[in-house]
Image (cartoon, rainbow, N blue to C red; front, side, top):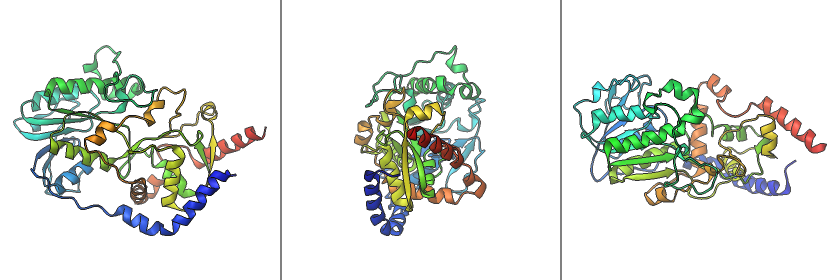
Length: 381
């Protein structure tokens, strides 16, 4: 049964629910975008995945010229005739399409391997004015403490030859290799492009186009209603950033010529697990009750829930409390949670039925029911 505290929250949300149609409408209305003071010639490595299309759309709206370089495996029908598309394969070192070309800015979205940066440097060094690299907060050596800032020590690579690592070896040992190889990719970027480098370290990127379903699991589950299993006591901190906020900010960094290292984590206020879920419920409407279970119970049952990280006794406890002060000072801004949730659910609801039927993260309703049954039995005992 919901606690008195939860009933009071739900009562307040129910009162607000009468305005939900206008809220959803306002959430989906894009703000007008003005032209940049100086148009740039921008090269985006990748550009057709998650954040790339948002970078492209915003750059075009700002009056910039955009070129994409990728393998061409994800068609880009959004910009027919407005975006130049070059193809090659960084896995094999096929960067011929970039040779002899010049751009003001290069944004490197997909790189997790140092040799990708090295090879890009061989072709682009001297031909670009500013290199922006999307890294990750996983580069930090110690993720257990709150307030991780950009000057914290980075993960150390412990393999034999970082330049020999491939996508296959990375996939086989993500836990041990991902952070350290990203850190070495950052170092290679500075080696190749000198001081004109910007390193952006996001945490969880969410919103429309997110194919991982890590955040999608929560608003999707809240929308289904009923008794819902929630990890921890509801106070564990959560940090997320809408892919549009990340992509658009990177274009603004390019326009300003801003260099340095930035943690791109949001929002710009403290967000706990319960607050995130009540925020989702304010958009989705409908009755839902939260049943909190302990981290120890979830660990015992080997139940993995996305986005959430226990804020105590966990090697990643600091991931929900990374310092974003430097990024905010450099102009990073955030959409309201309601906007992200409404637009995400609209995008997800337009996907094919078979894609919606099986989320790629979280637990199934059947698994949740079994966990809740076991939890109630334990509490009764």
